[in-house]
Length: 144
Ligand SMILES: [Zn+2]
Image (cartoon, rainbow, N blue to C red; front, side, top):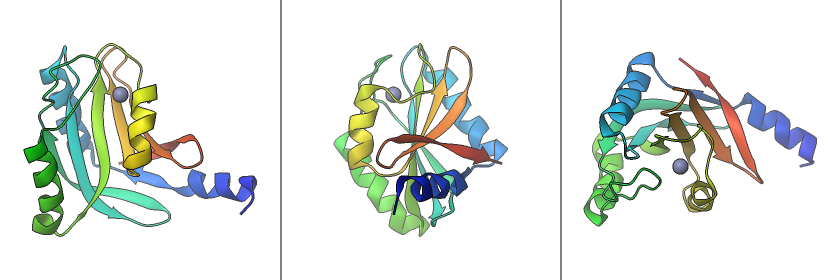
């Protein structure tokens, strides 16, 4: 596939999240300030969309404004929930209390190992954006 086709395909891909789920995530982010917050998003996906159906608000054990980590227990639970909910992990949410809603270099590194949608909320301008890593970072359109 050449670059042009590849871009077109990414452009078609949408990240579908309800206003309620988005509000739950942004409320969680505000509550956890000044530290980064995180959550796991479960749902369905295909070539054209990623659709959020359930969210699990997790605890950032780093308690840091610039990093987030899930405990080993939470990581185990994160995968168990796929079976419980009968849904796939489709996304990872986290917040940047003091930064823009754009993946940091650390985020980019983790995106390689976690090929989901990465939704980021900025505490400075309240923007909520979503990205996927293909050959490079691509922002994807959010739909309610
Ligand atoms: Zn980040």
